[in-house]
Every structure is written in C-alpha cells, then in structure tokens.
Amino acid sequence: MKKVILATVFASMLAMPAMAETIRMGTEGAYPPYNFINDKNEVDGFEREVGDEICARANLDCVWVVNDWDSIIPNLVSGNYDTIIAGMSITAERDEVIDFTQEYFPPSPSMYVGLSDSSVDVNGGIIAAQTGTIQAGHVASSGATLVEFATPDETVAAVRNGEADAVLADGDYLMPIVSESGGELAVVGQVGIGGGIGMGIRESDTALKAKMDTAIASMKSDGTLNTMIKKWFGDDALTF
Image (cartoon, rainbow, N blue to C red; front, side, top):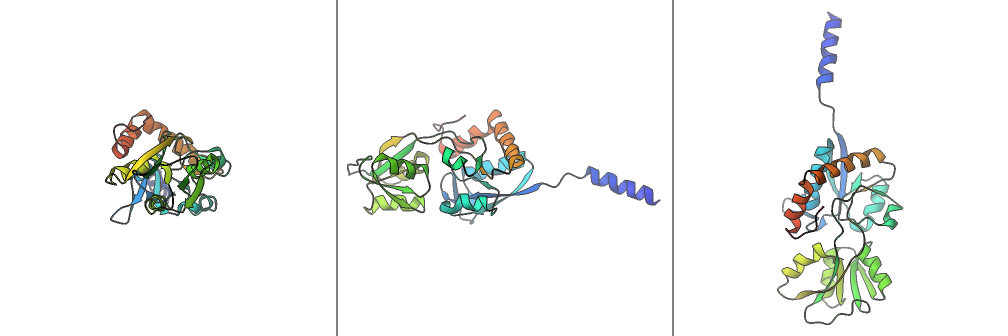
C-alpha cells in the first residue's frame, strides 16, 4: 500500500507545473512614456507592458523595483535586482560593465529643446542633460557647456528657469513635453547618438539573458512588440 501511495504522490508531483523563477526588474519610474509611477503608485508605461510580456513568455515571475537613474547600474551589479529595463541605450561603455539583451526599442533621435522665443547654439551654449546618459556624454564632447541633473524633470526645469539654453534628451521623452507646453518650448536641434534600447543584465547571468532574448525575438516575430511601440509612442514611431 505504501508503494502505491508513494507512486501516486510522485505522479502528481510530475504533473504539477514548474514553479516560475522570480526575477526583479529594475527601472527608474520617472521617464514617461518608457516608465513612470501611476496614480496607484505602481510602475507603468511602455516598459512595464513590455517587461510583463517578456516575463510571461519566459515563464518568469517578475517583480518591479524602482531605483534612481544615477545608481541604476551599480545596484544591478551588486545584486539589488536582476535586470535594468529603463530606457537604457546600448553603448560600448556600458557593455564593459554589464551585458545587454537584444534591442526591444529601435534607435531613435535625441533632440535639443529650448525656449521657443530664444536662439540656441547647441554646440556652444549651456546644455542640460541627465547624469549618466548618452546625451550627457555627447554634450560633454560637443564643445557646449554641460550642466547635469539627477532626473529628467530637472533638465527641462533648467531650461524653463534660465539655467540652461536647451536640454538634450530622447525625442520620445521630450516631444510630449513640447506639445503640452503651449508654445513655450520648441525643438532647436536633433542628433543621432547611441544604439537601440535593451535590458541590462549582469554579465554572469547568461541563462537569464538567453531567456529574455528568446522572448523579445518572439515578440518581434509575431508583431506584439511593434503594437506596443505604436500604442505608447504613436503610429509614426520607429518599429522593427
């Protein structure tokens, strides 16, 4: 009888679905429409939707962790979360410290935005950018005077209060702000820098990277990723 009971228990265990691995998804929560905190105090935006779909396809149980941008890579490396999904462009400099999945968002132009009633020299003026971004690196090498801020909101505020002549950031972030400014702000320049956006992963987590890459590839293949991009960035957005 014991053998029969044990065999039945063993068979039922085999029939049970495998427990999903828990993965902590690190994001900034301050860069709409990529990621932001909604009225329910939850992570929301394009990357929340993309990340949840990636996790579902990879059979991963994902939880979201909010972290300031300026320490987002160090806290990944130290193990405070397992991925970065925060509008982070893939660059050779970052790739020396962490690894990246394939792109889940194609390369898009960065834009300079200043006051609409002012004349801006983007290569010789005072340009605001968020610390640790590809835009800050570009300004520093362009001949302009770089003023850095911890959050993207502060870079736009610097233009409005006269601390900077313009801000350089992702066009997808700045264009809604320009549209809602009532004519106060205008695009005063554009530049192509950096690659597409991928998920940051510790270099040692090769198995996790493979799972994420497979999920992202399947979302590209069946059109799901393009649908999400158009939902959050409009029908004219770059797609795969």
